[in-house]
Length: 381
Ligand SMILES: Nc1ncnc2c1ncn2[C@@H]1O[C@H](COP(=O)(O)OP(=O)(O)OP(=O)(O)O)[C@@H](O)[C@H]1O
Ligand SMILES: [Mn+2]
Image 1: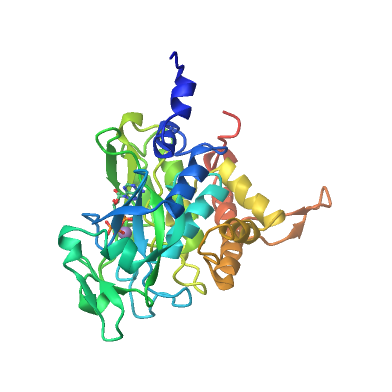
Image 2: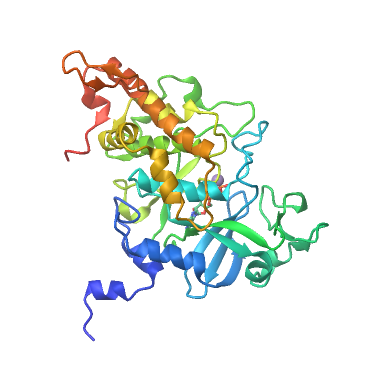
């Protein structure tokens, strides 16, 4: 049979169609048909194989479905109500499966499309996990005093009897992230984030003490030219909106070189403190005084038009584990949009129309003669 490229693609499994659609600009297209189909499979296909994912600090599983679609799974540790423990640092915070789900939706709604698609699923710890687990993972299952089946896996953080993951009594929620293409097919490059925190209870990172830190960054490839630094700004916007302080490294697809998007991975520590707006997450923005016009426009649109929280709530309501975020986190998201824009509504003397002054952005504009040096106009190119 004579099959053109389009026909071949249609006959591929959804996971491979998702991989085929990855471009240097985005992880999936806005109108992707593969992504919703793949997420549906991950949420409903019978689970056939369970192994622990090697690497990383906290426990993660790779679950393979009967049709061979596979997911990176983070199991639920705590109910939605529990926030980051007050005496925990950002680097000792537990991961939240619902934050992974919410971050995917938020990334998509902001128009970035740089985070792997994630869906929630309720697993049966006995029939889905214990019955399908093998090797080292299998040996960590046990029955708790409350007669629930539990397991803890092996990892460098929170993988012991005292931090076990237990069925309640038999069911367990998890975030199911679509797997990225295997590294044999699409190798990824890992970069140290220039605004990485110190990951230490006393020490500070250089950027926290050096006001001119960005000038130094701007001279170092790949931050000295092209899109990279603007992508760092976008990532800071995403992280600030969800309160994620855990951005130590980021990854890109090697074959795309430097002119490509940054993968938005690992959001398990987002949405931990609904009352706290962690301004230091915006350090790349206010230290470099840079933002993309398209990102600014998106944020402004959510400020003046339909609220980001409303879009997010609606989008999250379609997840099988909804509600994914408590209202207080949605309220926080809108408040944080306002903080980035820092809108003090004023009347424009000339036009009589309401106009706005942006604090983070406005401060940068005040300090520069030309707006072009602050707002990169990617809308015209
Ligand atoms: N959807 C995915 N498909 C394939 N690999 C992934 C996916 N998401 C993450 N990874 C890989 O798995 C690694 C660990 O994932 P993640 O960072 O979410 O877990 P973690 O336990 O928080 O790790 P760390 O402690 O290193 O921050 C990542 O560095 C990334 O390379
Ligand atoms: Mn992590």
